[in-house]
Length: 390
Image (cartoon, rainbow, N blue to C red; front, side, top):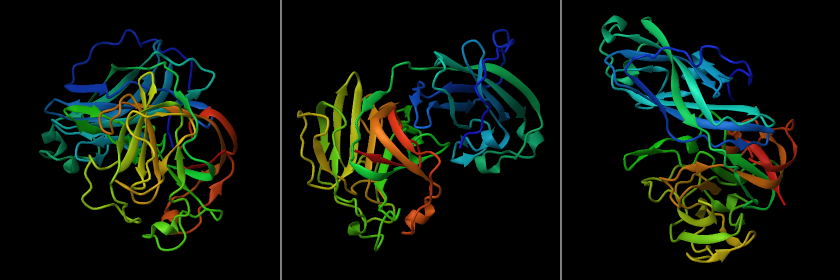
């Protein structure tokens, strides 16, 4: 999943004394880093850097190192491992930015759970610049960029990002029973919930730690029957529970169920959550439960809920290709403008990791890698894991 060097306590002697570099490129973090303890017993640091090329040159990002406050090297990314983490404006993957182009580098790495979490992370970034004429053309579109630059190379130390030391909120499971698959979850390079959105002139990634929960049957299938029928999904209509005490601050109901098996047509951002509930957990944290069955929500704005209270029934409303529960925590009750905050589930069991999702969408049984099984306390279930809640 992640290509990086292992955590090292070596100190980079040049970290504090490097010369200033002018290159017309701005690199800055989108949000703070929110560490979270994953079910692999490691602390995950997941964040993104925005890159804007203000120069008239072509610029390639060749190497990125993530460094601690004293120069400790946490991780480094280069070559294909860096290119596959980089998205240039227009959606093209790759590490070369044309004049006036921008994009993102999606970074994530782990440190041992016993290690001290850094207060900040800085980056040593190596770039190569070359004029469009020398590279063989105007290159006004991302798709027209060369595959490699041969111009001037330089590196700089910067792009400091703050690390939030606030512990992840501890919640109970929003569902009950065995074999819930963590889909679109943390912490792979790219997953749908990690998309950066420009909302009201500000970048946000509100769903970074969100999970889409779907349930496998005893044969490890997602559905049995016709893919487009809701009745083919045995978990459709199951109860969804409040993960903690809190106050309901927003309820949306009345959105129709979508037909499973494909993306719903004409979907807007405003309607993406379908029937949903926001609950204020206190201390600036808001839990979102989305895609409920229409008419199944049992609470209204202003209600106090207790951990374990039933909120509604799992459905397929909003932007969804099959019945599932979308769950996330953010710093405000908003789909689009909140900052994603990590959460950990107080107690769950891991049954293994699905080795391929394609078969599930064909109605065939998934294969589980059973190497990562066992009980987990106060950890975040990770992408593709199959977990049980009791």
